[in-house]
Structures are given as C-alpha cells and as structure tokens.
Length: 163
Length: 266
Image 1 (cartoon, each protein chain N blue to C red):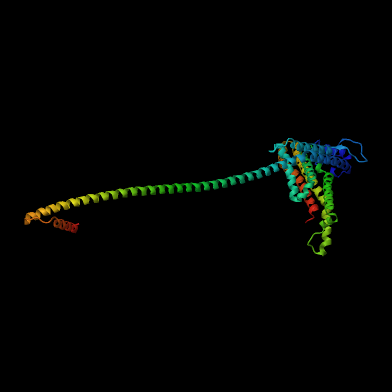
Image 2 (tube, rainbow over the protein chains, first blue to last red):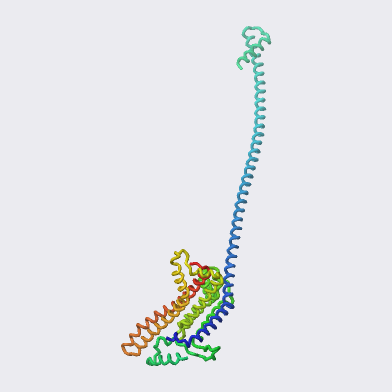
C-alpha cells in the first residue's frame, strides 16, 4: 500500500502545507472579500429597496387616506350647498307665493267691493222702481194718492224682510 | 523514492496492462529537490495535483469575483453559491461566532473538494487518497479547534469533557470516554476521507481490470467485459457524489467541532 510508505510522507506534508497556505491566502486575499462584499452589497440593496418600498407603500396609504378625507369633505360641502340652494329656492318660492296671494286677495276684495256696489246700486234702483210701481198700483186700485213716505217705508220694510 | 520503481515493476508484471489497483496511489518524484533541513521536499505527482487544485480553485474563485454585478453572472453565481454554501454551514452549525474562521473552513472545503474532484480525471492523482494528507488536514482542524477552545474558555475548556446531568459515580468513566472520543477526532476525520477516496478509486480500477481481463481473453469472452464496464459507469457517477459528499462531511464536521469549542455545549 503506497499510502504507508514513510519516505513519501515528508514531501507530501511539505507541499500540502505550501499549497494549503497558498490557497488560503489567494482565496482570503483576492476572492472571499470580493464575493462576500458583493453578497453584502446585494443584501443591503435588497433591504434598502424593501424599506423604500415600505415607505412608498405608507405614502400611498397616506395619500389614499387624504383622498378619502377630501372626498368626504367635498361630499359634505356639496350636500351643504345643495341644502342652501334648496332653502333659498324654497324661501323665494314662499315669498313669491305670498306676494301672489296678496295680489290675488286684493283683487278679489276689489272685485267683491265692486260687486257689492253694483248690487247696492241695483237694489236702490229696484226700490225706487218698486216705490213708483206701488204708488201707481195703489192709485189705480183705490183711486187716491198715498203719501210718498208711507210707500217708501212699506217697500223698504218688505225688501229688508226678503233680503 | 523506493516505491517508484517497485510500483512500476508491479504494473508491468500484469501482462503489460496496468491492473494493479494500488498502482494509482503511488508517489512519483517529478522533480528532485535538495533536502531542506534534512527533509525531503521533492516535487511529486501529489505536489503537482495539489498545485493544480490550488491553481484551479484560485483562478475559478478569483475570476468569479472579477467585475461583480448586482445580478450575478454564471461564474459569479458559482462563487457566490459556494460562498453561501460554506457560510450557511458555519452559521447553522457553529453560529455567528464561527464566521471568524470562515476563510479557513472555506479553504478547507475547496481544497478537499477540488482534490477529490480532480482525482476523478483519468490518469490523475487523488491527493486525498493518502492518509498522511487527510491526517494532516484533520490535525490542522483539531489544533485549530483546540486552540479556539482554550483561547476562548481557558481552563473552562475542560468542561467539554464533563457531560452535565450525570451521576457523580459515572463521571470518571464518561470523562475518559469523552476524552478518547475527542482525541480520536483527527483519526476518524482523516480515515473517513482517505478510506472513501481510496476505496472508490480501487474499486473502479478493479472493475477496469476485470474488463481488460475479459477483453484480452478474446472471442466470446470479450462480451463479458460489458458487465464490469457497466459497473464502472455506475460507480463513476457514485464516485463523483462521494467526492462532493466527503468534502462536505469533512467541512461540516469541522463546523461541528468548532461549535463545541465555541459554545462548549453538548
């Protein structure tokens, strides 16, 4: 078994030491720090990006909340404006209605007064005609004149009774 | 080296075919160097493949870290995936404090993985199929872990060998068991890797030998080579899995040992 030949031990050990130390320094000096650095840089970059994404997410959430608030505010304001306009319109309407009503009632009153006046006038005319007719009838019936006052009184009494 | 001529002779003996399954583990000197302080430092095939592993791994990872982009390119993601793989292993098993030893654990994983994987190339040499190499790696882990434990906890590190909630009468026995299990860690760690690598490669070679034997028998017998070749194909897939798995196991056990030393808990 060649592995048990003691004469081969020394050169193997010497060269093992040389090559192992050489590899240790070559890797430790030129390869590992760079590889480790890249891995760390990548990890840092990832962490950075993730934290930035987190920040952006929070900002977006804030913006969303702001938007909601603004929307609710706008809605409230719109409702207020609508209510105001509605109130104003209603008031205006009521005012106009009242005005119109006033005008109409005034006209109605006027018309009524006119009706009353013409009725009075008509009634007066009827009374005079009735007095004349009564005086004529009496005169034709009994053949003598009656006192004007008596006729007037009787007619007005009768008319008052019938009114 | 003595083993060199011996092994080659062995290979030659088998009818011109290299069917000695252990031949692939032999160490050849490629370039003889003068001994330093009495130690043989010759450049061998093992050294060559260690160097290839180091070069390949360094180039791959350094290239993958060149011009990094936020969205990784293919090479970059290879580097990053391996990095994260090892980093997660440490974090999951040894906690955040374990990350201090990340470069060591990463180097260990990459070195073992590349040596295992390069060993899958035909005619290459598997560095980790030698017990002395895996034992040296395991000892480095053992020394590191013990050092970390002693530096972090001082004498309190000895608490690692005293399980809590145990009757006093049983303590001496358990302390001895704990101590032995702790001290055998480098052995189990190194033997597991070495044995896996050696067994797999040996098996592949044995099946290869069968195939060659059938073929050289000629005639109808040649058709019999299909069975061992089919086995070889299947085992090659399995060997790739084992090459990765053993690197993973070696590393994760290192993490678990580190956790023991850092947290002293059972």
